[in-house]
Structure formats: structure tokens, C-alpha cells
Image (tube, rainbow, N blue to C red; front, side, top):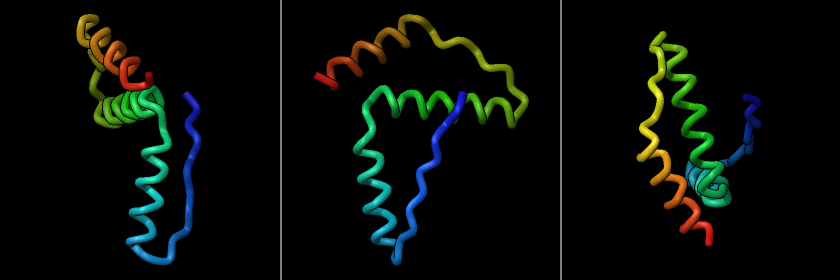
Length: 71
């Protein structure tokens, strides 16, 4: 899975926080979910843990809630 890198040079920590918030809020719920899954996979790989499959009922609930938020 290829991930894009977001980079911005800021003059202060306040500017950095504002830029990070703007970037995070610009993402769709699906993009945030994809980023979370990517980080989860990286964590498991680094720790040498075999990932378990997500409960289908829970995964379906997440997808439905995301769709509701997007409308």
C-alpha cells in the first residue's frame, strides 16, 4: 500500500498545530479509516504480531456510520 507524505514547514508550534488540524479535517472519514488501518498494519509488522481479522459485525457498523457522516 503506497502512502503519500504530507510535509509543511512551520515557523512556530502554533502554526504547526493549525496546519496539522487543517490537514486532518480536510480528510474524508474513509481516508482517516484507511490511515488508521495502515498504521495498525505497520504496528503489527514491527511488533511481529499476526493481525487478527476484524469482526464483520463491527466492520459493517464502522462503514455504515462513515457513510452517514459523509451525507
